[in-house]
Image (cartoon, rainbow, N blue to C red; front, side):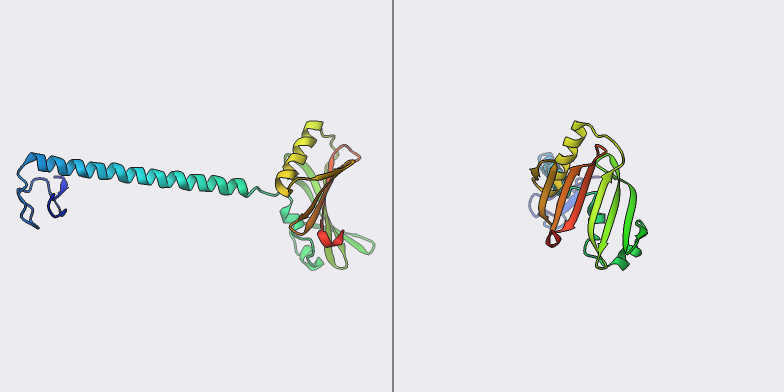
Length: 196
């Protein structure tokens, strides 16, 4: 038994009913029953189209959000800049090394854009003042370097270049510098903008 809508009062009723129990409308004609069933079928198709349209919009919004929210592999390290040394001491991922009056904090084998390197945080006046990442003793090809700098541009905006020094100014109140290291790798440095 299927439910249909009464053409008169739109009440849901059995397709086998001879009259509408709500308004008394006669339902003996197969044309009326078929029209009601057809109307319900169109309603189902319309609901499916609405659901599919909503799903497409949601997927599009997720893709836009993901493209705008590029993952910054350096963020968890440069976010220490300006923080008290005690916070660096409490970090489980950083290893402290005493060098005279200075303490350096390091994280080894940090993967950035398919390149492995080491992070070093420098402390000045009891606060993290500079964050440096350098590739591990690896000669990068020109294509690898070009791709690396393009990815930095995607994160921090268009760079300025002077000789072999790439500069991104005032990214989230930080300055970002990158250069080729003596080993053919890349060194990326972050500092608070007002420390420059």
